[in-house]
Length: 287
Image 1 (tube, rainbow, N blue to C red):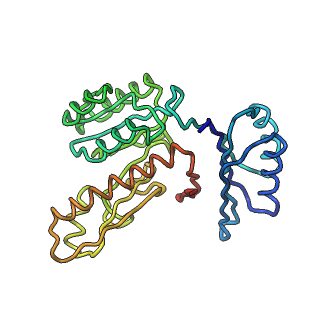
Image 2: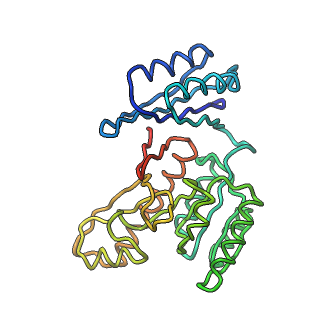
């Protein structure tokens, strides 16, 4: 499949928005392959995602024309391009990982098999557990220990590496450290985390133990964008598994790890495919 363009829009809702966008794309000869929209009736907001092929399409001229339309209709928009094949221009993703490697392994495999349209030029960890896998995949691995006394220095080194490697997106693949507000502010809506519970239930570091103590019948995992408020960023994806009184904490952890892999992989794929719009502390995730 050839390269495509993706237009993401959010604005106050009004009549004629779909017709306005589609008519303009028609004037420029766009071959639309996907279009979807959503209305938030309570907030009076409109959201839209349109994708079309770039063969013979003048993207620069369209952008200039659409900027005028967006200004008239009070639209916020992003105009992205996406290659569906291996490309040196693919988004550059940094993986952060600690000792639990299941999400880390899953993402490396998905990227290697071209399921995830991105490059992974950098892996950062506060443990050395994942270094062998990074070596296997040929990706530079940086071990940066973090303690309460060295946290600021560690983050400065991490930010230096992220800048050096021109990183577009950070994925916390069970990275068990809290990022400072200053760090998060450098990558707004560009840090994806997986939390091992069905948020907002059981925040914190030991949610499976808390779920077991509460006697729940469902456990879950949540992938979300990171904000300065711990575990409270906009949720991208969630999934659940049923458990029973026979399950012990170890069983919850085992079942939960499958959920964690799934929700993080989906969230990363949807971000790379420009399917997510954030508004307030919520997301619209287009099919």
